[in-house]
Length: 319
Image (tube, rainbow, N blue to C red; front, top):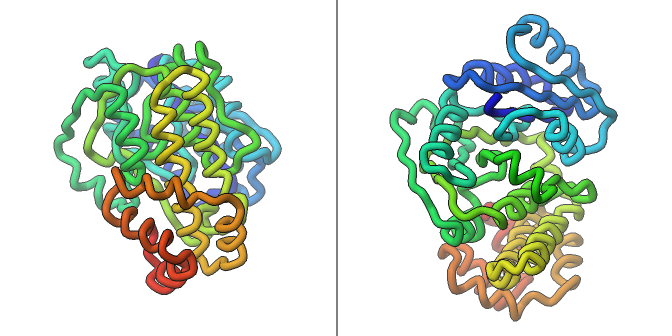
């Protein structure tokens, strides 16, 4: 088969059926679904079992494991999948009906190493898609888009070739709760020469108040660790882009986490991260290539970390 759609899920009974039907209703039919129940306790597993019974004509692999986290679940799904390509979809997200068809056709038409699209937090964006446009990009351009404009992309919007994943032993890091997805994609891209980019949002990332993305803990600093790992991986692979990951990626990750702590009113966490490592000299580099809002935030932080906290906390601007 062409595509394995790996869907890990944990306690998402409210959204899992909608997610599954978004895959079933794809205009592209040569796929399998690999479902990984990561120890759900809210009845999601029973809902999925009933859906599988009703839709027994679909090729489905079901994996049941005790709760080990999304990285473990994705790795388990990846190991059991059989498709030529792999696509990751979280159990509370959706994909447009033409997502798989578009990504497979473009990666094969352009003979590229991967294809990827934008994602959206607005479900109404799907109804606005009438025609997609694509562009073949050299890998340096892909690196720059993923580093400097990563608010438009998510790792799940990429279609991955199994040959690359197997050859370079690319998996999700089990010791990371945050940032493991970007580390995975950076490692994959390290071995690519080009990619096809679709400028339309074909992946819907659901954000809701009780999602893990809304619960703030100090473990969010792992996003910085994941960027450091990606940087070291590129360095070991003799990929010159490691310099930009080091100069821009790492301080940008720290600025983003500082913003989240300030936005959430977590002053103790903010001060802890602020004093953990001195990034001020590296943060000057953020003034060169990032969008204006990052530059402004950087200037404010360099001038006064305390003022940065007050402004973000009061304005509630998410970067």
